[in-house]
Image (cartoon, rainbow over all chains, first blue to last red; front, top):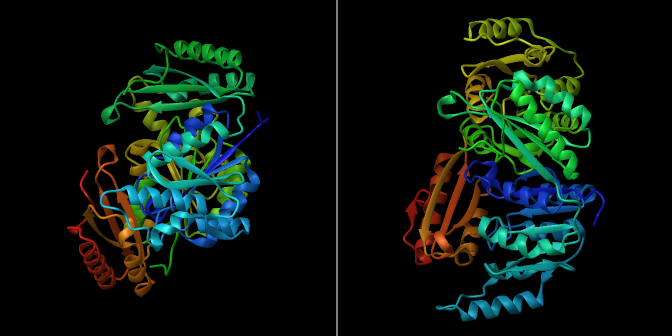
Length: 258
Length: 258
C-alpha cells in the first residue's frame, strides 16, 4: 500500500474538445480509483497534437503516482497516443512480437478473416518496455509504460482494460463517502454550520451540492463527507444530518432520488 | 473578429474528480464555442484547492483568448472560485454594490423572504473590476474578469449565463463540420485512405470514430471533417463518402442513429 497515491486522467481526443463526443470515462475511472484508494486529483482533455500529448504525459507522470489515458490507440492517422508515449519516455516505438502474434491469430480466426494491414499493425506497435493490458473485448491491447496506463477511448473496451489492470495497481486506503440530503433546504441556510463541521474535521473533504427538480422548482441540498477514517466520516455525517434537521429539513441518508 | 481565438475550460470541483457528479457542461460549452468560432483547445478538471485554482487560471489565461470556468460560486465553504480568481489577478475581493442591491431586492421579494446572510453575501462578492454575468435563473451572478469567464456549475444556470455572455465574446470563423458514416466498415480497412485525404487537406481536422451496436456486435465507423472553409469541408466529406463505399459500406450523411 502506498502512503498517499494520486492519479491523473488524460482524455485524449479532438472529438471530446469539439463537443462531438461526450466523455463517458471520467466518472467511471474516478469512482473506481476512489474505491482503490487512489484519488484522482486532476483530469485533462487534450487534443490529438503530438507536442501537447508528449508534454502533458511527462508533466503528469512526474506529478502523480498513476497516469491513465483514454483514446487514440486505434488504427487511424489520428490515433497517436502510443507513439507519443514512446516519445515522452524517449524509447523506440516498435512492433511488440507477442502482441503481433496474438492479433494475427485473432484476425485469422474471424469469418471472413480480417486483413492484418499496416494500419492494424500500428495497434501491435508499443513503446519498448511497455507491458500490454489485454482484455476480452479486443486483441489490440492497451499498455502500461512505467506509471502511465494507456487505455482505449471506447467505454466498453476501456472498462475491460481498467479491470484487467486494477489488480496490479499500487493502492492506498479506500476513500469512504457518506451523503445526507434534505428537500427544501437551501445551501445558503446551512453554509456557516457546514463550514464549522469542516473546520472540526480538517482531514475530511466536505462538499455541498444543491439539486433541483424538473423546471427548477423544488429540490434541496446534498452534503457529502469523504475521507479514509470510517469513524470520522460517520461522525461528520451525523453532524451534517443534524444541521439539515436544524434548518427544517427531513434529513435522509444517501443521494436524493432522481 | 479575432484571427485564431482559442478557449480553455476549467471545471472546478472535487465532486467531478471523485466521480460523484458527471460533468454535464463540457460538451455544451465545446459545441457552442465551435459555433462561435472559438475552438476549445483544452479542458481541465481541478479540485477545490486554492493554489491549484490560482495557478491554473493564470496559466490558462496567458495561453488562451478565453478561459471559462464552471463551479464553485455558491455560498458554501467549498465555493472558492471567485476569491481565487481575485487572487490570480492580484486584486481585492470585495462586495459588488450593484449586485448586492439586486440580490437584496430578489431575496426580499421571495415568500417567505430569504435571509441575506454572510454565506449568501459571498455570492455578491467579486474581484475588483469584474463585470457581472446576469441571467434569468438566479440573482447571484457569474462574472468576467479580463478574459476569464466564471460561471455556475449547475448546468441550467451555466447555460443561461453562457448565453448571456456569448454576444460579447470575440469570435473567429465558425468551425464547420460534416460527418459521413457506414455500417459494417471497420476503421482498419479505411485508415490508409483516410490518411491520404487528411494529407491532401492539412487545414482540416479529420477524425475517425468507430461505433458499436448493443452488445458490441455490428456497428461501423463515422468519419468527421472539420474546418472553416465550407468548400474544402464539403470536398473532404465527398472523398470520405467515396472511401466508405469503396470499403463496401453504404455511406450516409451525418452521425449514425442510436
